[in-house]
Amino acid sequence: MAINFIKREEPQTRFLAVEKLNLLYNLFTTLLIIIFFNRLNDPQAMLSGRFFIAFATFAVIYVYTKFPSMATRLLRVVSQMALLSYWYPDTFEFNRIFPNLDHMFATLESDLFGCQPALLFDQVCSGLFWREAFNMGYWLYYPMIALVSFYYFFCRPKEAERCTFVIMASFFLYYIIYIFLPVAGPQFYFPVIGEEIAVAGPYPELGDYFNLHPEITIAQEGKGGLFTELVGMAQGAGERPTAAFPSSHIGVTTILGMLAYRAKKWLFAVMFPVYVLLCCATVYIKAHYLVDAIAGLVTGVLVYYLTTWLYKKFEA
Image (cartoon, rainbow, N blue to C red; front, side, top):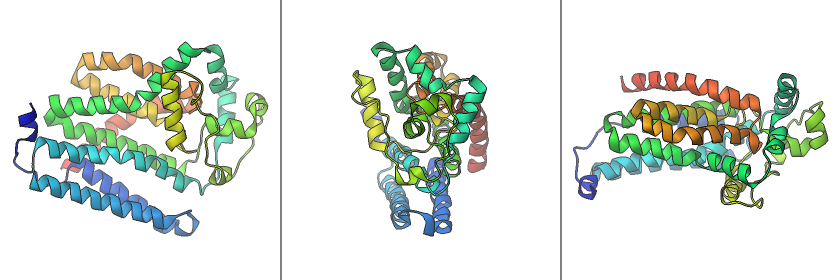
């Protein structure tokens, strides 16, 4: 297997679909930087980051052309998907210039359900067992992305490029929504307005508060339990007051489930319990309102079919 992995192959002279997608998103957000240049906190750094990403993309392609193999082809895919860790917090650099909209979503939540499910959930399911179970589901989000991607790459190689394109395109569609829809979620909004108002309302507008105070004030770190600590560390390192509506955690994991079901039913069966835990966790840890979670489920199905159609256009 190792010999086949590094065995020289006939080089592909075209861009991979994920590379074209990443460069297109890079160009799109570069244009946004130019448009909003005077309103952004550090547009020069954002432009520099995009230049480096484009340079790194072409550098990895160059390495592949010199040493074409399954290993370097995988490197091309993995390097593009790894950039999602850059593009996610980058959405905050745009939406921080717009007025925060959490008051609208908290009001909608209260009107629909007569309460704030994000506050009620961890009271009903309190204790270390539930906290660890839900945080485990939440933390396994990225391992599930890797699992599905690697399964297609090694077991269904003819469909691997479509799989990774669908995943990447789904993220980028959600990121475009987050750029223009500044909703931070309960973990940021509720500590600012206070628990008493969070329970009963009315829910005040915060304007540009998160532009000046981007730090998270609810964290799982320090509450005990391995997965609780892991989620807390991840939140402390990279969480921003952005990307609450719709929930991309649920949307993308729904898409992963559809890809897994298409590939192998047993793969879907293995992932399904984690999927349920993750869906619950998004509200349980206050990362999302319940309406965000529902929207994530609905949009996940729609985005799967949209990105599958887009892949055919990209490859036409």
